[in-house]
Amino acid sequence: MSYPSLKITFLGTGTSSGVPMIACECPVCQSPDAKDKRLRSSILVQSAHTTLVVDTGPDFRYQMLRSNVKHLDAIVFTHPHKDHVAGLDDVRAYNFFQQQPMKVYANEMTQEVIIREFPYAFYETRYPGVPEIQLNTIDGSPFMVGDIEVMPINVWHLKMPVLGFRFGPFAYITDANRIEEVEKDKIRGSEVLVLNTLRKEQHISHYSLSEGIAVAQDLQVPQTYFTHMSHQMGKHADVEKELPAGIHLSYDGLVLNL
Image (cartoon, rainbow, N blue to C red; front, side, top):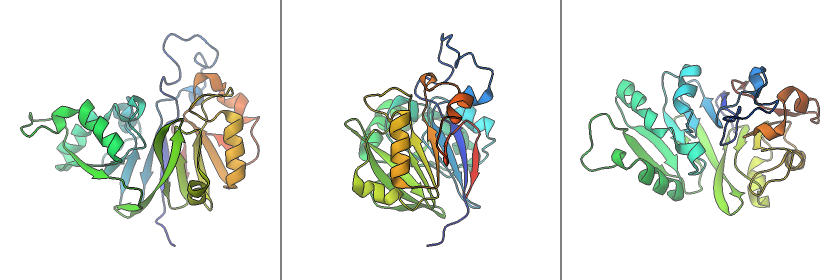
C-alpha cells in the first residue's frame, strides 16, 4: 500500500507533570540542555494536504505557537487523562480563523470526559466564542483524516484501554504497559515506533526503560523513539548513550520525515 509522505513533529515528550517539574531541584529539572525540557506528550502529523494533532494536553496552545501551526484539520485522542485533553478549549482560535468546527476523533470513553470537562461546547444554546467541536467516534476500524489513514491500536494503561495509532509507516503508542499480541501485529512492519517509557524504575501503568527496549526489540521496528518521560528517566545526553542501536529518546521539537 502506498502512503503520503509524512512529517512528524514531537510537540511534547514529557509525562503528566512535564520536565522540569514544578519546584524540583533535581539535576534533570535544573539541566540547561533543551532536550531535558519536556512539555506534555503530543505529536503533529502532516502530509502535503492534511494536518492533525494527537492529544491536546495542558501545553497545547504553546505547542501550536511554538511549531507555528496555522491550520489544523483534526485532533485524534488516545485517552481521556487530563494531560492529554486539558488544552482542547484552545481550538477556538482555529474555529475562528478556519470558520468551521474542529473535527475530533475519540472513543466513547474519551468523548464522555470531553463532554463533561467542556460542557459549554455542547450546550444547545452556546455562548459566542466557545469551542466548536465535531465529535467522531473511533470504533477500532481504520479511518481517514484527509489523505492520512489512521489505524487504531488497542493498548493497556494498567486497566484502562488506551488507543495508539499507526499512520502509514509510523506507529505511536503512549500511556501503555501492555500490548496484546494481536495488536502488536498492527505495529510490526512499521519503519518508526514511538513508545512511552516513563523512567528507569518499574511503574504500575507505564513501560519502564528496560521494558520499552524489550518491546522495541520484540517488534523489530528499525527505529524506535521513547516518549512520555519523567525527570526520573535521567538526562537525555546520559541515557541516549546507554541505548541499543536503533533506539533513541525523543525530545521536544524532533522532526521525522517519512
